[in-house]
Length: 126
Image (cartoon, rainbow, N blue to C red; front, side, top):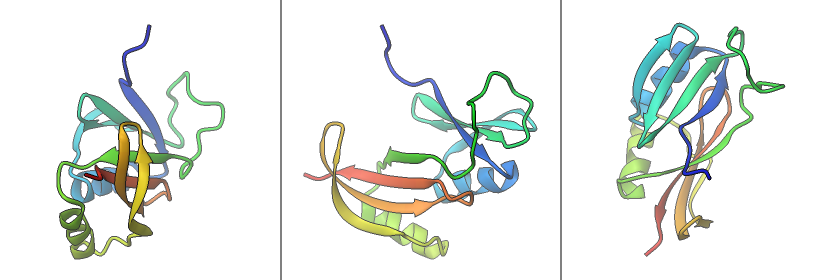
């Protein structure tokens, strides 16, 4: 019946700050829908940013910045990702560490976006 995700809403306190982080730090493309809603393209889906005071409806019962724990796959080796993050002075919370992904063993780095959402960046462990 279902085939995958179209978009996942991430509630943020400041759209501009979030767009800067996700485009500059993670390399996602921003597509503006309106001032309080932006899509960040991630493969064939999007992270949809909603600002906390958005009037968009329907929405989650308790939209809360910092409540997402998201794992994304990297096309780059994690060593390159780690160097990129260090160059931008983005703290790595943990990693690289072995984990288990949907399709098997992965190696992951963990960091946080400006609202405290946990971002795990992974690569297959082969």
